[in-house]
Image 1: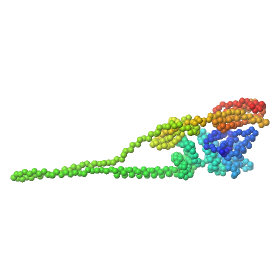
Image 2 (image 1 turned 45 degrees about the vertical axis):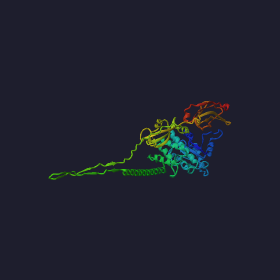
Image 3 (image 1 turned 60 degrees about the vertical axis):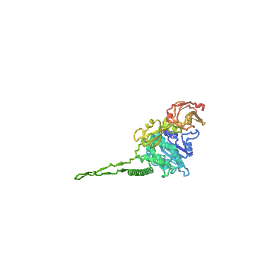
Image 4 (image 1 turned 180 degrees about the vertical axis):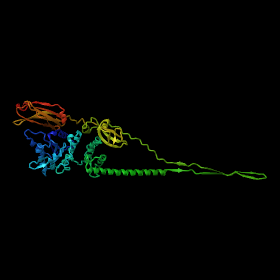
Length: 529
């Protein structure tokens, strides 16, 4: 596995701890200058050794990191630049802005390349462009930070494999590389983002990021269907350029909409033709039958009287005409009765597949489920992971996937298709142990805390009080990887009596919520205990 060195200011410990703790999408090992430094090894040599072992370096840029007297300027950047300058070296550099830096300060920031007298400008040497688009990670909320740190992990992992580097320099703050979804987990993350952030700028940025990764190179590419769905969502957002969408993505969205328009017009033409054919069929089947007219003529009646005078009287001819009203037969099209669609019943199938640990627990949902979203006609609109029961899901937002699941319009339904549960068979409980570090080099003692973790990583805060009175060291902190051991130390004379105070948590805020524990006073005049 490739290695990446982290350069940062000690005043940015909190953000760096949070980044190190977020391992999602990370495919590289971290080397950092707060790890164990042997008592007999000078700290400068230790830092240089880590830079030379690494395949790349991250610089977390802040106002504190850019101070003129910082080791970042005098030691770390010069060595990094030396490796970048070497044409045979594939070393990569990843600057990440933690906060907004004044443009004038960045433009004046310079350093000297190791092994030379050449002073170079930071922005020009590392080709850091578009500095007006700086990240503000320090001000971001926890979820936004986690998403950004995951993006850093994924982008750097891809870059170390040779994806899209220019002069071995990559500015993470403006990466727009297209990454395809590798497994169902990535697709779930995209669907979850669609559900959580609908109608917000956060939603738009998540969809823009996903669309840029999934944007197909041509119409035959396998991710085309998913990209078209995302493009349809983005077409309803007016300020795409302000939210960071590039020109190629906007053009691709327009192409998708043109294709959809052509499809709609073809469907409309087909519907009109079908209607005309139906009406013509009805006209041909309508007939009217009229019964014939019957005329009846009655013969005359004759009377003869025999007398001297013969008179013959002829009765008038009577004609009777009977007309029968016509009989009309009309064929009527059959009447179709549409039964309203009803959503299927909820399913409470137990699902134990790691989703509870990866999503539900991470987002603070004690109970969660797999939901399918339908429109009023029963068409499936989306599948999401969300909190359980339905009232908790609705509390996160009624409008999702272009329907309303709270009874509003357009009508939609959320149907439970399974409940997620933790995998208790693999759960490991976090714990740690403390021991005292005490080393003697013949003239002085190095004394401090040693922490061993089980079942998770940890952050340690500590300080030392001199039992002889008068001196208390500043509070310091360091990070311990999961299932590993790390320690720190301060140098003391043989006549001192240091007492180590420490507290441990899985995050910095967790550690700071604990009370300090004590190692007990150590009388160095008697040697190490």
